Image (cartoon, rainbow, N blue to C red; front, side, top):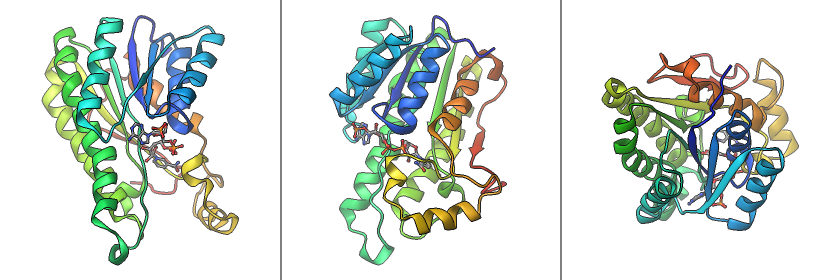
Length: 248
Ligand code: NAP
């Protein structure tokens, strides 16, 4: 089940956290995984771990906040591996502030990386995916993109935008056997949430029916499913992986 042998995957933000877990799971299923982010040393560690486990990995320095860098990442993947089957738009940042304190650069930085970066990658990947009549676009959004969150107007707007982008792309590319889906993680234990106090984490956990924060592997499992042939009739969907925090 869920084998990905012969498939080439590009995972953005693969240097740590959820992206690292996604890269490792896709490789474990047989895909060649191109790990992209800004920090080459960390990417190399992830790629080494994949190879040590018997998988195939490559690394690519790319800045999702820079359109030229995103396009170059897709082009380099195609040059080096001859195809791109699975695009996972996972790279993301936060610049949390209440609306009245939020600066224009906080808005721009988050929208550029989390939404425009994904759009640019999708656009660059579309032609080769359409030509090969097989593609999987998987966008890592967030539960807060579905429910809103104080202090995160920029991040929530980007994640809600990513969900809308996913649905439009799904409708445009379905006839070419290219699917597009979003995964919306709830609160996941990574560097992004490491700064939260134990008190805040306890308050979140009380609201989660499954009684715990999620792990990067919880998200990676959903991505592997959506990337697989078994998910060939699933497109334009939002797969919530949030412990029951939001039941939409
Ligand atoms: P993380 O630990 O902070 O990792 C973020 C990843 O994105 C890193 O690999 C980082 O690598 C990369 N990245 C950031 N800016 C980049 C840029 N401009 N260009 C290229 N790569 C960039 O975060 P995470 O928790 O794993 O989150 C992964 C995704 O899940 C994000 O989209 C996030 O919004 C989403 N998410 C997370 C949670 C959660 O609770 N953790 C919940 C919902 C959704 P470099 O710094 O090396 O570039």
